[in-house]
Length: 315
Image (cartoon, rainbow, N blue to C red):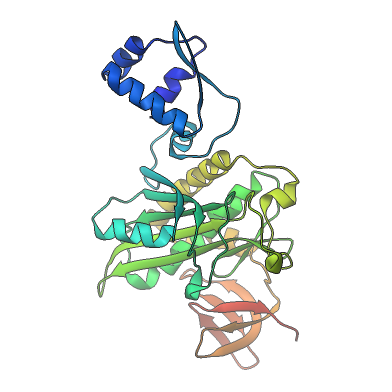
């Protein structure tokens, strides 16, 4: 589909036979692809000279993303776009179990059962970015949480491109003006000493309308910038950022990114409380170490925490 879109974007109308020769497919196949594009919302003008794509509106689908990326990325080899799914996480986990390759990405317009960490419900209305990525790094299971930290940096860098000051809330959220705008979830299949696959789920409030009950604690990019955002452009910028970080991470680990992560950490050097369902620790947030663990200075000693829910507290 991406190839025929590029052909139809040319300055002149082009006939079916010529399109078929360029793609190496039959006239019937060309007409079928054009029909499919029209069903997806593309405005294709036709006349005796042939067909031409009229770019009168911005669409969001896998073909637009592939066209805008215009390069092969290991983190984004196959894109599957859906109008509605229960959850991109559950879909990609099923694909992982079927043996799909690293870089399989599932994107959806609306999730009916989206979830975040600890199975918390995630509001996933149309207009946001809801997607999951299949990854297969050579890591031991206890290192999987580091990927959430890398994804946080990639998201932070993407918001930077829009001149927006975002902060990373350990371990997996992005905040702007003290309101949540994005979240990350990591799920995996592993044996005792090796990860088989990881599914990284990402939810970003872009142009979606937030429920009233979330207005005080969450925000969207549209609300921050006061205009609609091109989601294709945003997700392509994210994939390019993450590809660079992921490649370096597999070679050098987390250590080279510690300074950047800690410099952008929300509630750094502030009093915080971390709960993991079993224990609650209160102290000063000193940032993460090279193993991705949060360092907290309590009254009595230094604690290192691998996971939990963090909130800011008073002294």
